[in-house]
Length: 170
Length: 209
Image (cartoon, rainbow over the protein chains, first blue to last red):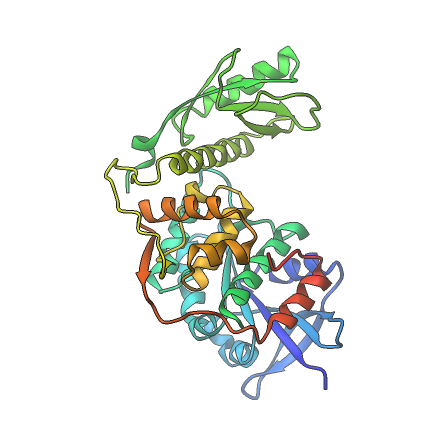
């Protein structure tokens, strides 16, 4: 029986979760109603069918508290997480802290990559400040700038996630 | 850690392949960025230089030993700033590899690689240490996932042992990694290797390296 494997892309509204997945897969996403706690929430995803018939499903998932049942349902059994932070928002470091706290269990169990979007050289906070926030949450993971419209850059996030998972063995 | 200003280093660059007018624009833009870039950049006309800046699409010989940077015209200050700082980070890393026992305060730190010892990353390294070099991003990612002996790190990453040793020394010297002596055997099980390999293959990713 074929299996489904999930990688979650999370982050604030408008950061480009669906755009990132769409860039990676080169096509439109499918909207799916995920029922976490009796209240279905529409979540976008794209699929990759692997050569053994298994399916890798990439979700652009909300991570706010009000959607907690939904992202908890998706995080259950997921193989890794990409946190996208919008550098142009007023408090991107606080945004990152919220997502790390919400997904700490998944991160501890699997792996995580932090992609900082809409980042311009010289604008504070720099990447090191995001790494500081991660360190304060006990998370040691890649922190890299990303343009979610650029497939190569999104692919690089997934590559680093896989490097982590391969190093941990799973 | 020292502030960016106190770490600034004097660097020399020269332009190759630009028209006189475009060259003036690039030089002026670099001057305008003075005090904002990580290092202090001065345009010169002769080698030796730390950096050669060429226009995108330039075909020709570059002086050996200098970093090269492509810039697109019309020039964007943000892009130029970002690229200069990435070069600075790369130069700092390369120079750090030549003196791996020193922290950025000049204080000697013991480098304790040896049999039975594994390096553990304590936090994600400063951007200036990694630059945009995928080799260092990969090594740091692996070390963040679990402690590695350096020979195992080299074997799994397919990155030369000497580079791994030097990178480990730089991480240690900068206080972002520590050596563990006889930790529990952290070898990853290979249970999901097939899955990761299939995902890589489908997405067109190399590896595992």
